[in-house]
Length: 317
Image (cartoon, rainbow, N blue to C red):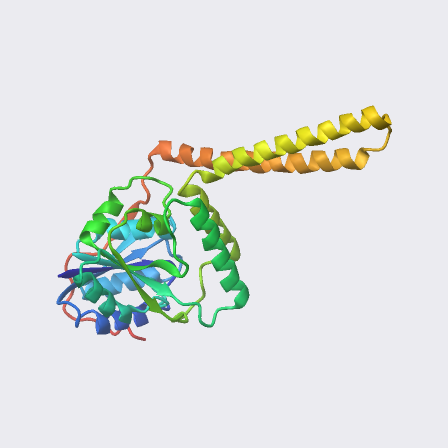
């Protein structure tokens, strides 16, 4: 069994020495043949220099450096395309995905599963964050065609068959959580408690999380377009009923000047609704536009050498 471990990296200079030490402790007992593919996603700190050093003195650590920051989805795809293992794991560089779980995950793969996903429990999370996350997943599961599980992220172990299935999907607007579920295959789940970052700060801001959530909804299904049809039909019916009520009132009681507030509320309300629905259609149109360009998901500017030098420096400090 050859095991490939894919680690997307963006400004993770401070975490990499601890990650390397942890992987060298965890992986050798699992298999004699393993590789760690570290994907530098356009880092602006010393991440790439450290990756060069790691790869120079240990050929089991390989790196890809993308020409700019393409995002985590592209970094994971780059790693998957360059991995040649029988089993392929994806985990974060900040050690919030504990590599120690890989032993249990490999054992489940040996039982016939093609995917083993790690599900983070929300022990210790703020109540507001937990409630918001659960609400998001409830909404997502009502909209998308596959089931997404709260707490399941990108930390998983895949068989070669599952990875080949993922790579056969050529869409440009990728939402990996949905794609992992879409390919199917037998899947097992391993729970783990929340782990603090090894060092540094999270790269996810509130804005980026919000955009990621919107991308997940719009990139993986077309139900918001159907919802726009329903909302439009409902607004039309409400407008018709209101117009009928006005006509009946005029016939029974005559007409009067008052009505400014009602008119303004109607204009503002229906105008906002129209802009919202046009925005939904525009989001889908933009995604179609990007799909038709057929641009690559990423560009690689540098890869690691194929051989390593005999003496390794200390990278743990």
